[in-house]
Image (tube, rainbow, N blue to C red; front, side):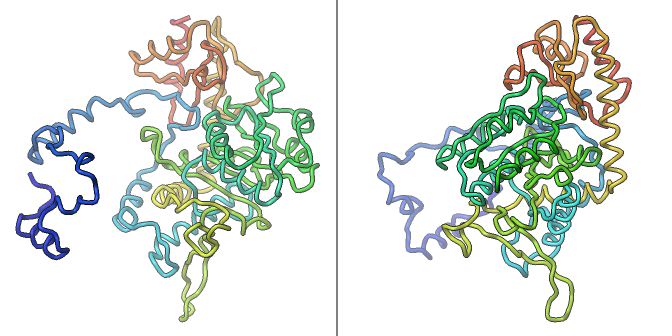
Length: 448
């Protein structure tokens, strides 16, 4: 089946219009030695029916989180997504519309982004949030870039308990910025203590980056650590947060953060092979004009009707040119809308209920697992819904054995640099039932 319906007459008409006699004329600027002079090595064409059958066969080989009890985390979590999210976000007005660039365009999308900003600002306890960034890792990088620009300082202190993928992105983005990135070691308990921050701070420190819950699932003492950070003039405190945890724990704003960034995947976005996701970014009113990305504002038109526009968009293609605060080109429009619908559907009480269930189910799981011979919490500190377990056998062995039982028991810590081969990172969300948790416990008991 020819999916691109074009006849030979239409092709010749198009060529004649631009003054070419053949398609080959379009490639004369490319040396003949660099052109492919044979057909592409592709299988023969198929009818639409045959192609649908083949794709369905391939798709049937996939095993998603819905096919098993998923205790995997490490930055992406298997949360419940209300059907409202898919129904609204799948509407053609949202799916087909390009992220708007002009103030008068696509009022529906602009309003959704405005609501998104409002919800993220309230969730984090910050003054203002942007219309989203690409995902959590680049949001951390953008926050650091902003701190360097605001303070004029060149040293970055980032906790070694920040997700290793985030730290990799930070090291890459800071490579050519002539700044120094220093990782803060843990106190041995899996968290960062105040003395470590104070030891590494100096008057050239642009920011201190602390994630909580951190990569090991432990809750960091943001209030104490950010109080130490602010002992240095202008040094900014950057909180890397879990949006679900914000419904139960103290918010970044309440703990004294200057910037709050995080991964928005838990807010109504499926795991979908690791992305695309949505980056969250919020800050204080003081720094709004240095904030990367775009900010949607509410206004009125000539007829005094409420409307929405792109209030701030200090992008490299726009008015600031080389002085732009960031080179981010857009926002994650469709995924931001999913997060907006999710937060609206759940409401503050529903979101707190999700957080509460995550917390209590995770602690029940940890209590049951640590009663097994050979299993122990890697660190005794407080955690939200994720915890690291030291196991009597290789974590990969546990993961392989669990597949046969349709259980995804967690993430091996060693490849992430979060522990040795016997350490397993387990996450428990509101979707996990007591029966599933008990089945995981029985499986671990049998393996030990």
